[in-house]
Length: 452
Ligand code: SF4
Image (cartoon, rainbow, N blue to C red; front, side):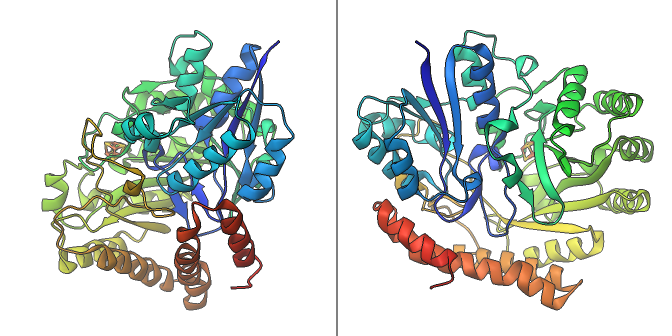
């Protein structure tokens, strides 16, 4: 008799982009819903192996199922193994949820994965006896190991999106967004990088396999296919080969990727456009070059980036730039220079992120779940910093709002500011309830219905 295994991504009132930020996850304060690619790929690996009965419960795709409903649902199901994908923002309620699952299913083998679980492995081993296994590697690599396959991206199947209500994976502007990888890991060495903590190798997939994946995803009629690679054009020859194959096989998809813009040139941009690339996201991080040097972040010459943004625009490719606010040494003036750079580069979209201190004790001896305050996008690690946490948060909010206001004041308010303020209020209400999932679910329901 095959064992039944459930891959679980819970929902507590916020959507968390759980395979972002080195799989530490990012709480989203907008209406974008991202799939979790490693979770879906892991489920696909086990399902295709024929060795397990596999189900995926991605609560946000189940009409935003809250934990009280989820526990009721699980009570009536026969499950041998539960693999919960945790994140920094959900780590605390995830532990409560696993305890509750253990109460209703004492025989079930409970496992937890995600970078937050890896960082807290020691604490979990010593304190969470209801958890049977702490998975330290990306779930898809773990799944390959479970079925005795070589752990290699070359063996990763196309994620089977039909295992969930994939139509819920909406980009609030562009529509249905499905994700894919062409490679994993990064040859750069930025000192603030969370990805390096989780993706220990830099590996590519075979180009024919990627093309085949795109063909399969197109059958699901996505409005957009987004590559989740950290550095999509680390090998420009591979990008060229991929684009040529997409063109020659006449595959039509709106493609989005993330890369270092300065690794591209005008010719490659034109080829990418022809292959369907409609948006390129890239890190700029700071307007202060001394900070970039200190953190080994090599983004290229500003003038060249500006030129490439202009060239992309002339081809009809949109651009999105990422900026970091609140490096430990950063003053308000330095942060302001980052905002000015954003205005100068004038990309179609920007994303200001708060600096995240991704420097963890390698032995992970000191940490408790308090390391990850519930529903926050940062840890509680104390480190010397010119700007305090409140100041960093305010600057991110102000810069995001200010940039959006360049287009439309009312849109900036509705799309950004109001949602961020609502999220802040929801966190204030829900954070104290993480150890009582019935109360948390009731409060999250009220927030959703606009009753608070
Ligand atoms: S470019 Fe830097 S931050 Fe981005 S994945 Fe590579 S090392 Fe990490």
